[in-house]
Image 1 (cartoon, rainbow, N blue to C red):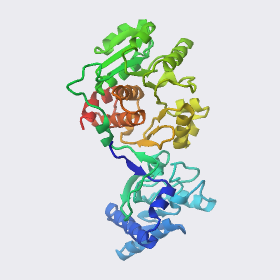
Image 2: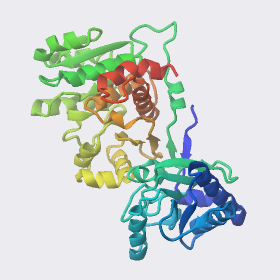
Image 3: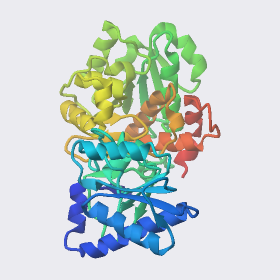
Image 4: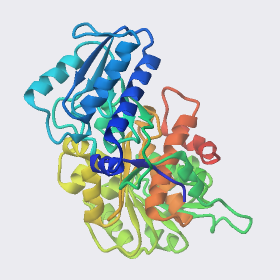
Length: 439
């Protein structure tokens, strides 16, 4: 299986540093900070250092001495660049009041900020921000990326992230960063395959006025290399779907269990509706079908934990996950890592919390963070695309945790492959999938 990049918590970094010469590590870290500052801001002559009393502050002070020796002036007012070495990875909770005021002053200074290891105020182990936090332009982090640099809201404060090699060995971590190489795990069609064995996906959804959602999921499944796709939809929607997805077979919802007999994966929810009949159908499909299923959009409405006969992958955004856990979406946004892990444990299945940092959690496992795509993915219909891709990978027999992570990577890379830099729509992502998967 493709190797995934480690994401370090504060405790995992302490373990990685154990037994090493701390002074030597600090000299390398300080040197890396000074080198990156001079490379990125070659014309900066006036540098302000804000350093705390711990190892993070020590890294900053070493960097400042190197910069002074290179002819830079260390100043308190009107700097060209600010070095943030206040708190580091040991922070828990809010900064103290005096430190919080200093953070606000730095953010309001107008000067670019280089953060040492992690922006002060960001929890390195979770990405949570409990109070004031530095908005960095660049973060020089030691040895490997920290969880708080990859998971929002911390990732939004990090700016560009540069990883500095300070002479430590790579170590196993609980959480990992998804790389494009995960797509090498997606099974490719062989000469022995037919359209059914290449992956047969059943999409259930497409109520009147929402046929686009089901069509996007079906088209995405095809472009993610499924060999056969069936759409089960209300009878009045089928004429519309016939024009939207020529290659898919269409069946009325009344025939959905017959249609599922040969399917290898289910995608339920895109445009299904939230009425009582739809809710009852979702419960029955998930309870009775012994094939893996992706549960998205309307199928997440009023979903309750149950003993299901096959793997289920839930793909909520923050609002949907908030409803599943009985919390406000703002609380989910503030505690993304903890929330997705809680949901995976509660529903005993894989849960994907969508976002710029899509978090893929499974019970008893670390979280896989997929953050490869552009912000243009924040547009209507891309969730339906992710549903179709995930279903295609499940139909090909991928393990659900890896299938969901690979689907996130494929969607994000397809958005990068699409020719549209602005005005990206979900259909553009669908059409770019073959190029992304051909990597």
